[in-house]
Length: 217
Image (cartoon, rainbow, N blue to C red; front, side, top):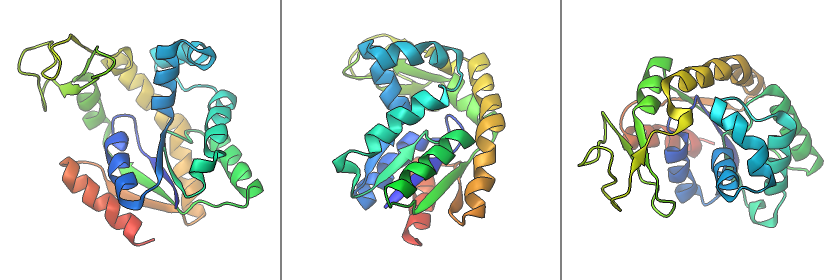
């Protein structure tokens, strides 16, 4: 099964993607995770994408497409994958479509999480992340605060607000999402691939809605 998970930044795609891959046994491919790892390792890709991530801007199509296509062309993706964070532009979507067609493969569905901008700003600007690389536990100052302000419950290290979670950056990320990613909704709807679900509520509630869509495919 080959799936795409669409939705605005902070809509819970990463959390729900894990529920999907645990259920249908496919690989979870997150471009955000790929890029953050590259930045942490300071490798060639990391050095190229770091400035874009810090400004809350999209990584150029040619760079992100090359990274993703190279990944899904590997043998462990033959049984299926769930793309999280890609495609984000029409250029990326078209490049992915061309690659899959050339490889005699096809998408099984595009799953869209619907969450309002106000909810997204509230979710992301309140998020705090552990600075310990082996922990990276995530808290929220409103919905899931740590027992001690600014200190990770898991390992005791300092909690920080990621640069791309600052309110101004979040609003910029949402602006870009509406400008660049929203057109993908109609693109995939016209191809009868789009399925929408309500991305608000508890993790369990959202997960049940998402899995129900997959089970109907």
